[in-house]
Length: 131
Image 1 (cartoon, rainbow, N blue to C red):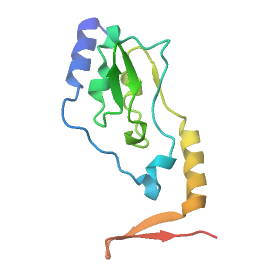
Image 2 (spheres, rainbow, N blue to C red):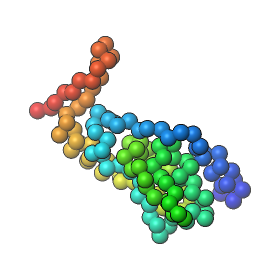
Image 3 (cartoon, one colour):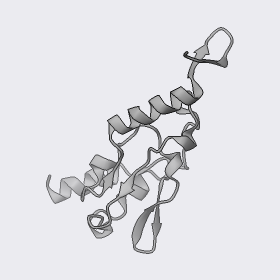
Image 4 (cartoon, rainbow, N blue to C red):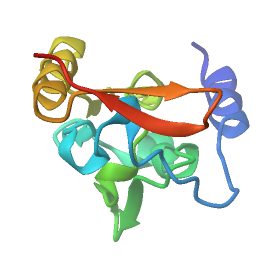
């Protein structure tokens, strides 16, 4: 991708609106128990290349600029199972757990909490436990 096209791409995708809150019960499970958030490889991260693109791109405001580096500031506000920031990082510094790892975590949490379903006639959450 040419430099001019790359900069335009990065500029068009920056988000300057208010922080968006991620669902706190994705899949009917407590968000704080789902270890799904980005990890930054600081040996690859170079804000001079992208001008802190991940900080501006993320609607959930998971990333924060601290001095001259980027940190994962609000990991549990990352939207499960979004990974949209990772392929946009021009240096490949952002990674997430594998889909297999996420599935394993969800299976374990479903054993603990059961399955959540919604009944559109009652508009309330009901939980069904497997035996």
